[in-house]
Length: 312
Image 1 (cartoon, rainbow, N blue to C red):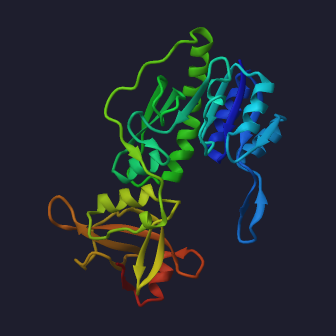
Image 2: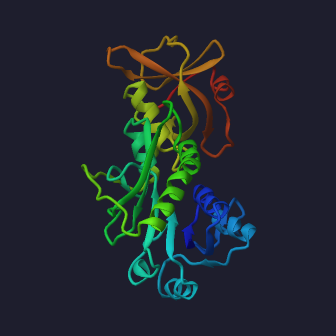
Image 3: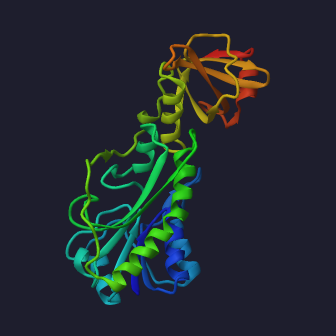
């Protein structure tokens, strides 16, 4: 099929490559403009732009799908548009320009978690089964008919970054299946059913952990905001990023104070609030980044504080 693809981040790249590998004629790629990255703020092409260059596909860099993108796509005359995390809305007349319209790979089991941060919000809510849905784009947000869907289960403490990386590869099969379905039945698709929920975009303040909650709730919150915007707590009124957090091998912390951090048998244990049985629980803190300092091993940080600390 003759396809135009729109996407920007790293986890959109597998779908682009899968379409090319399947023999589809990807005639153009739309991605967002080069952005400043790193400490020196060097203008850098998006991962999708770099992949398109490697594949020799014509690319339009645009931060919105306006008149320029509409005219560009019209000249390409695609049969289908495929979008994966482009970072902007597709509106008319572009929405109706390809013969078969546009389809979108979304990282949730729609209609649950419509919006900007479906994986992050699902993990934050304590969900371990995460889905992918390929659906038809319509004017309403993430509300079009479903073509294909699938799901898989992740271990507790899997970060949003790790889950998205896996789902990006996992979702390529759903994308290819949806394209094949449209090739044989242009009217394919089933209306979404069930209660819709909305996945709001994350802000920096979403990263502040409440250590008075149970270990399972703290770990779920940490997973949902890692790596972006980043999980943090306060130490002596200064933010400290909690880069790596995991289920503890043993509940050996002597302190019952939520937020207490202790070095026990070589492991850094972080006490949380009471669990369902009323007893305090712990998590293992493995890597941190104090304010204004580089990332470091949590045990090294704690030894510099005499072997114990309290986070708020």
